[in-house]
Length: 552
Image (cartoon, rainbow, N blue to C red):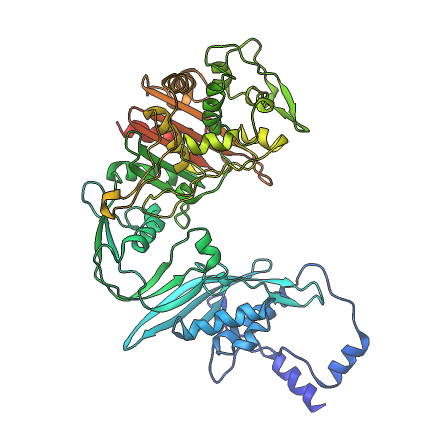
């Protein structure tokens, strides 16, 4: 009886309210400590009854209790107890142990905010200490409470991001001498590039530091940083500095970025959600601007997205070389075309009767390309992308991490889908800007952000170039599209030395497709994507066109 009375008394206490939030405080008062396990007769009775597994949505009390049990135990340094309230105790134990041992964060105070469904935000304040140097650290994070399927128990859905929002699963927090010295990145005119001035460049600057920190002659300081794990490294994510305890001496790295174009690109993507864009110099491959609406991931360089109809530039080069299409020759564009068991159609089920291939390209007729699938080998498009456009070989040496496109060999319906930029094809704006540049210059020039002379690295080469006749036809196709086709509205006033291709890529689970646009004007080539933006002519098109115009 006494034992049950003590449990009841302990549960009757309520956490203190601070500014609309409940503070979990470590100390003598022990506010926010919850009993995790029952005992005595109550436990025996529960066992005997063997209640049914609880299902359905979590109650507010269940979410609050699980969240605060976890936060209280973590704050008090009771790692095993905190991990036991998660659905992955082993992973939680490892990361929470490293929080004090490797990240050297002590005195953490966790303040929970107002739950929203199963999600509970919380604020973290602590102190990072290395040797005789200490600095405060503060950030916001969140956890989500879920119901365990086996017994219905509410538990914290464990992910590394619970500990810090910049952590992906497999990453860790480490405090110590920086793995790489800092770098002072310069634009092509010698001005300093900072994330404060150009928010999109945060991930780029991280990549430059990782690549050139030691080579540029800097010395490392002491920092709290995210050390990437295997999964993040496979995605080419760089370590990230969260807090500098002592400054290192930076080395200097000059990039190819244009300060005026970079500023214009930042402004353009800021006006739209989930937008990314790249501008290059077609004749050399120099990257003049890169910008993303989301500053935390460089979709422009590392995104892996279906490019939709912008892929038809590459497909057209293949069909022209194989004498399956010619700009001014009649080419079929029916409403529907079936191949490999799939029935393909055009946007709004349009058709072009007796039209040329140029007309089909300019209006982005899907069936004009699908109808040729049976005349191509399974690896034809893959070889064309690799050998002519330098894509899908994972060998670009840009100066920072990039995804270099993927055009896997596929058959049947998937082969046909790849011809119009769906199926297994994956690209990003850097890749598609390079495609436009290859058409404009007549040959592939690997894009680069840091001149190869800086570190004597070799740039990727294409195995072959297209014939002059093929290049001329591709330019004619893109020029006609910019003047009279789906890209005409966005490219208005930028001619006559210009070309463009629009694209819309369907993605499972999205109500709106991703909008793509790739184009060139003079010696500038650019490409952009707006995820869930709809038609590329209306979403990515104005962004790309504005940058081509501002570039002169």
